[in-house]
Image (cartoon, rainbow, N blue to C red; front, side, top):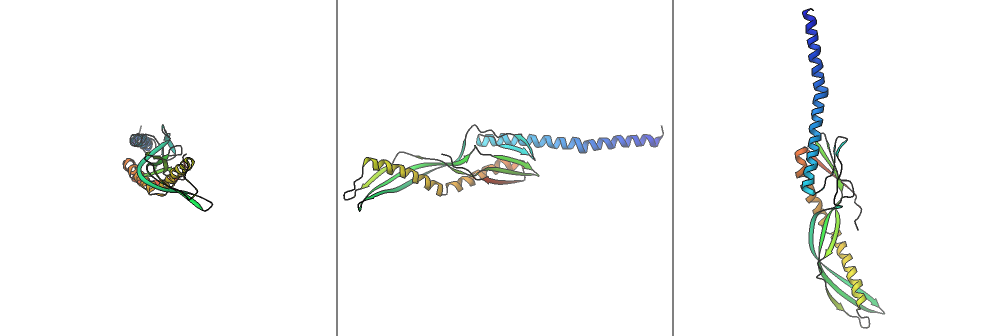
Length: 212
């Protein structure tokens, strides 16, 4: 066997090995590390928020969304609320002045998709828009009645006024800055958790349906 022929065989073997390493071994190792990183990210999210989002590497789903809870509350806010209920009859107006304190919980409806896609050194996070999850009274409701001349406050009026008061407190919570505060808190926490796995974290919100 000539020396040139032996050299050609050696070059073919080396070339084949190089091609295998470049096109098979390296991509496989990169994919393995990417999948391992995605699983590690899912674990970090679970530790931070007590649920696991869907995690994808490019277009491959590595982890499915797991939501043992239906809601994720990221903000708990106490507030005082006042309301005036009134009723007029034959020119006579009665009023009930109501005040009390509430706790509003703001967060995310986990029945909707919460996913993270790792692609091109970026993390694309999709989650529901934050919303008011609950508004609960502390039970310290106080009343002050203002009677009409012949239109007096009754027990039924108290019930209607209380229901209207609680509904108005819910509307107040929806209009207050609580939702924006929850959004900002979630983004800060998410970026802290996801940043080790991507150079840039991009967050997109879906329109949420209200929980009742």
